[in-house]
Image (cartoon, rainbow, N blue to C red; front, side):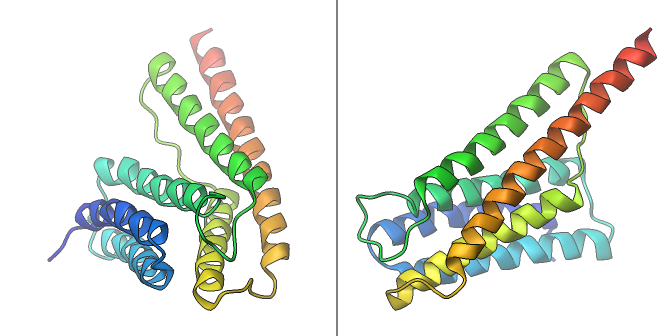
Length: 186
């Protein structure tokens, strides 16, 4: 039986394939690869929970795989040099990548100063990831058919609001952790 960590690594391996397919104009195939990556994400969590295969490595790898998939997708679907009918706005890509960089740097600082910590995703963070994945999927479908799907503009703003709100939420949670550590060491 395949392990959840193997599925997570497979999801990361799908990313360069998807990027190459988009770059060379095979957006329909890129959509299929993206959907396969989403399937591995769903399956790794299901297998880990159902068969008790949760690992510390998986706890770190899974969100990294999600970030690699999303950041890469947002970046390539924003490029003006590619012949795409539908794009993700540059300002949204900057917001998404900035939030993710801020979160990764914060976790790194916490790990170096306080010690290794696991920060489980919040409901708001999960909703943000789902909305971002849905946006990438809609943009890929839009590029496959040659026009934007209905509701795309609304989803772009929903993704922006969720991205900003979850970024603020995680920063507040981080400050609480720091405050708790400061109180405990006093």
